[in-house]
Image (cartoon, rainbow, N blue to C red; front, side, top):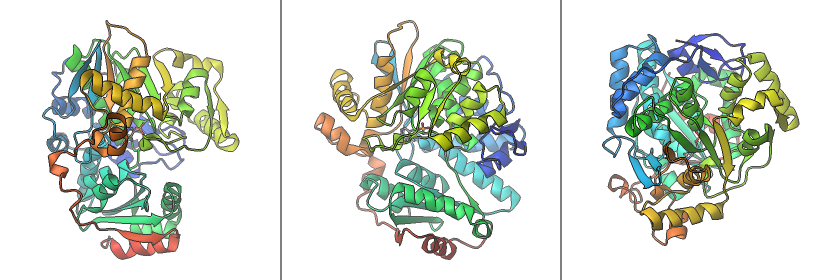
Length: 460
Ligand SMILES: *Cc1c(COP(=O)(O)O)cnc(C)c1O
């Protein structure tokens, strides 16, 4: 399998090279040259389906036995027996719980595998990298858990000091591995992101430290997420039976994976894109217009995003894989802060997609309501998924699966506000608040952060 850039001007790569570069050199995102077609079969066993679904995307770029072993290893640490349990909420609505991994958010599903793939490929090549990233919460801890104790890399994560929840901070700072480095930056999440970009733009520094990233534009993350769409279909009737999905959305990586499952032959008559008050995608799907606005903080912070990076992969398909047209469209959007698709381009989105947004009051009411109705406790992100699913109308003949992306205990304040009960952390994290923390507070200043990285990481 070969990978091409959505902007059409970067080298064509195999899977392992696309994995390690992440972003294409023309600023685009890597996508497979063709969509493999899903064969019949599948029993709903997560690991077996994962190996089968991902094999054509990996091709012969990574040894097949080694790949299968990495997949099995990635999901062995999940708390639920079948990795991602499907809970029946009644009326044809199911909840797929994707939050039973080490850091209690669905990002573990992709990052546990991506961390192993990086380590495998770097070790094989005799190389080392320094992974740097900025986090507003969930990504940092999932990336740290995926990269801890791996000899081929160091990981440095910047979070805004005092602006992530205590659970989120402790999930990062209580990891005691020598290759994990936490920076509490005196600034906002945007400052963290700007500093990461500035480190990548400092070419001598980037080359000296061999900087790399595991962010949500990495193709391997999307690939790993295709799996649970297929598993859900298998458990609900088989790979050839229709299933609808509702997906709480931020960077559009999760729901785009559902679209990949559809392009690969799974029957998904509808993908419902659920947003919080940061609802740029709602307008895009409804009338083809995207209009950039400021990000508003909500109870579902991992969806507080305006520009969804993975949308570029959908635009590439809508524009018939014309990379130059994708680049022109996105350049226009960046320059004007707004873009409108031609009606002819937007038309395919009226079939198979819908999009809807919910504010914090609706989210709190949904958490309370679902706890009353079925006894299921939702976190605020998963509640957006359930609201989106319920908004999409009844079709008793086609099951609807809402994806649950975080454990309620990861967002205890919102859940307690809605239900009156503070959700407990799973037992293995019960001592999170007693573990020692390791972090370095730094000023919002490139030189200080680069000096910290240089002093902390092991020699390349
Ligand atoms: C990252 C995240 C999302 C958004 O997923 P995207 O792939 O960025 O659309 C939703 N919920 C939770 C809990 C997350 O951590």
